[in-house]
Length: 296
Picture 1: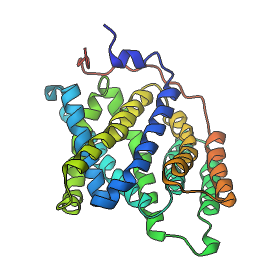
Picture 2: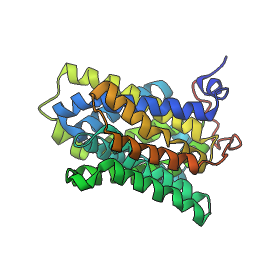
Picture 3: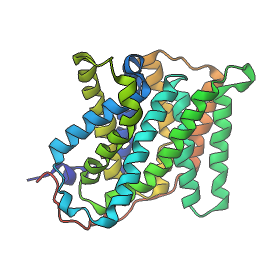
Picture 4: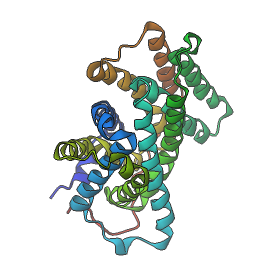
């Protein structure tokens, strides 16, 4: 019988990555209402907790297959995932979704440039940074510095996430690694998420969180992990150039955040930076070390 993992093997890795981007940005746009009720950390904790329950029930990972050497990477990736989620949601609470994604994109683009082992490749993160400056229009004096700091923290987490996710994806079959790291992410965000959400929980909030958990983290993180098993850091990181444009589009359609002409020019510079840094990066399919055949 065809498993979900084998079925995705027939789909080009870039298609998995693009679907993941659409899912995570739609989830972000739809999370704004929940952020207003339980705060960004509370929203991140609820989404990750619901996602952890979904993944544990669906995957049922075998802990005996986890080696001692796997533990540090799983813990770090889970913690980074949780903090990245909190920072991202805190940023979109304060500034437009497209702007947040453009700033956040500097993380994976820098990873792509560094991994290319070419000094000339650093021109692309520099161009993207110029695009971010144009996008935020600091000359108008309307810059939300706190929102930009949160977005930059999310970008740092995103770059780290790409590197570690590929390592975990190479080690475990299917999305077993995701089922191991998302519970860690939920636990990491609980420290600030629980106090923020306490007193505001209701059946409606929990149902909303469960639905949003499918859009992010379950679906996009699973697709990203599967895509990263078949792509280099460079190819994946630069393909993310589409994400700022997707963020602007969904910000417009869902949140009615209409960008100015200047801001569109800034987004275009960011996208062009990613396109310019693009390299062919199909990886050979890796054979995970464990023998856990996920979702037989």
